Length: 332
Image (cartoon, rainbow, N blue to C red; front, side):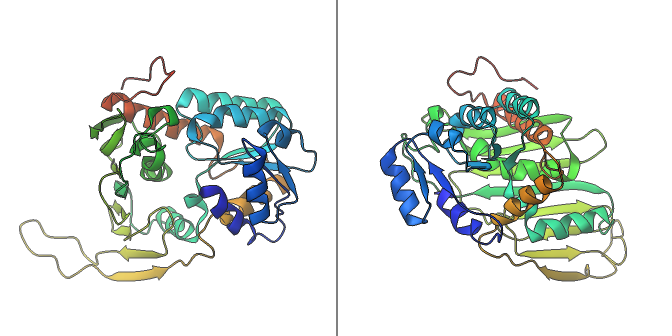
């Protein structure tokens, strides 16, 4: 349960205090509160929203509830860190972004990967021209999930499917490096419940770059990510959502067409260890931004969340996956 992992990592932020918990019922709130010594335990989200001791709310409810819960907390004057995906689609994400701006409150999607040490090193290397211009981004996230039509991963009513739940990791990775794509194509396997279970999406950029984003509920994947540029490449060999090892490969000379390279690409390994599981780095960022007087992130602002959601919409449109209540989604 992501809320439990978040609570454990929150303890690593010296000036953060877990003061309250809210749930759908008093029993669940009491159990969570007892487990993490939370002093204020609310049996409804409305009671949590009205709690004057709360400054920032972390929303970890099921995907379809993110919109209503975020609007509730913003309306009561709380800042919000909302678990990814921010919303079911770009329209909802845009509504949430507009509500935060109108309320004058901070809103950020919890794309925690962007705040980990590995991502910081990767961004510095790419920004510093280490591998030249980025031509190709490849990233994957997949695991074998036992099929259960009532589980949130497979239930359309709960925003099920690989694209929305874990495909967001490789897609946001592509956005971080290349921005929003100019074209989107995808191929996938739709399961018995009508959600996508095994997907490869290709994002095309008019400037000449491509990104390949793979997500799967059927295949165990190492979670590798690779960035290939005009002068070399960077690779996270595993766990691209929370990487602890980065490989840098920069050929000393270009490969000769029709012949062998002058030599193997020089490699160097950079270790980027995490403390905790890595969820707390985003909390530190939220605190720093608020203390500096900002009401959004400069790493994962609401506008970026809307753009990422729009790309996920386009992937689902190609696959023909809709959620209950969605009248339509954009067609690329």
